Amino acid sequence: MSPELIIERVKVSIEDAQVIISGADCNFSIQVVSKSFMGKSPLQSHRMVNDLFKEEFKNGSLHALSIKTTIPELE
Image 1 (spheres, rainbow, N blue to C red):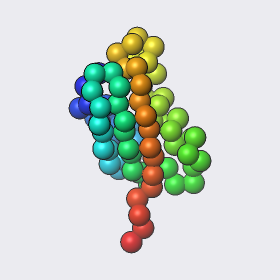
Image 2: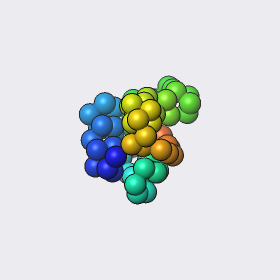
Image 3: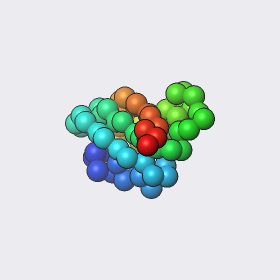
Image 4: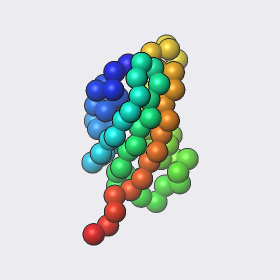
């Protein structure tokens, strides 16, 4: 799975998501910043992102995705 596809999937599925990604092949680290994570536990936020890629984990096109989620800094 390409980094571009990962970014696109997150941005389409999570409102106002800002995405930073690193890695290659089937192993990526992703940082997602979104207001959608407000009021959610870190586990809930990670699941929001992880659940977007269930099929890719299942079929092997994605092996590892390290996730960091945060909310935007308030001005």
